[in-house]
Image (cartoon, rainbow, N blue to C red; front, top):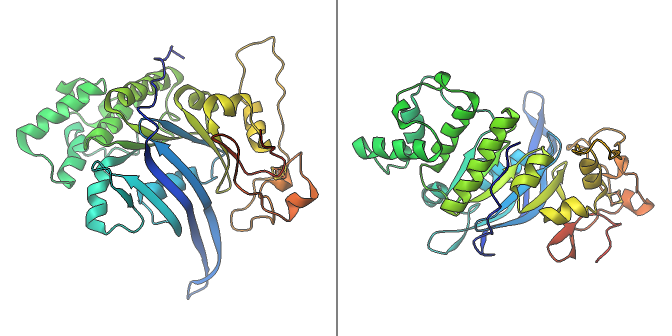
Amino acid sequence: MQSAPTRPEPVKAERLLDVRGIKKHFPITKGFLKRTVGYVRAVDDVDLYINKGETLALVGESGCGKTTLGRCILQAIKPTAGEVYFTTRKNDKVNLVDLPYDRLRVVRRDMQMIFQDPYASLNPRMTTLNIIAEPLICHNLMRGNELRGYVGELMDTVGLNPYHLERYPHAFSGGQRQRIGIARALATKPRFLVCDEAVSALDVSVQAQILNLLMDLQERMELSYLFISHDLGVVSHISDRVGVMYVGHIVELADTPTLFDKPMHPYTQALLSAKPVADPRRKSRRIMLEGEVANPSKLPEGCPFHPRCRDVMPECKTVKPQWREVEPEHFVACHRAQKG
Ligand code: SF4
């Protein structure tokens, strides 16, 4: 991986986003009358915040609820319960969950998403100009030559040649397509981006270029990111803080150096033990997790991780661990986590 620019300091520890008790339960229906017989608890009672200019990464196995949480925050899907407070440009704190549609539409200009698959997320029948201009046309912000000129500037910003405005997505490589996706996300001059596995589908060398571009844009445009990934190497490179998810719950959240040096939750410890170390002399001490990931429609009683936990205690099987701050800004949901 290429060397990265030094991480910029977050602009200020000012809250941009405050998520409280967010839940998303999908009903399981059965029979002709579609009777609800249960719920898949994709996201279950999650609290987090994101400061202006910072990157919060969410890591966890596939299906743990990272993407659903990102979509709930953007109100792309309505959460079952909880609040999402967003600080607007006028410094008002609004709860996106309760916001009427016309006001939500305005606030949405400030929140965009970069998708995982640069092949599937771009319409093959649209030119680059139309793809990048789409959010501006939807929000009725620009048209004509002004729009064309602005899209050209955006292409230049993300490292694409503005002369390729009329090209179709198939004429670009994977990395270039992801740059088109980033330009589209930047079109409305947002302040918050959800990057959903934004580099997972790319080659390692291209990954580094896109990560560096994201960090550079963050510094120049004072962006805040929710960076969803399963790749701990990428996360350690880009994030200020990291949250670890397990079947719809965040089980640990801390600043990046603390989480990587001093993980407290047994699940975080197991995930980190699987991270490759670039030193052939160091023996890896991988923690192998036994059993299967819990079924989010039939979560075990007590701690959802207890059937796989090597440190399980009798109380873990009956009492759900509280989400506690064990050190300043280090939160863990585990009975064994000791206050520092
Ligand atoms: Fe393991 Fe118990 Fe902590 Fe859950 S609460 S992670 S079962 S030690």
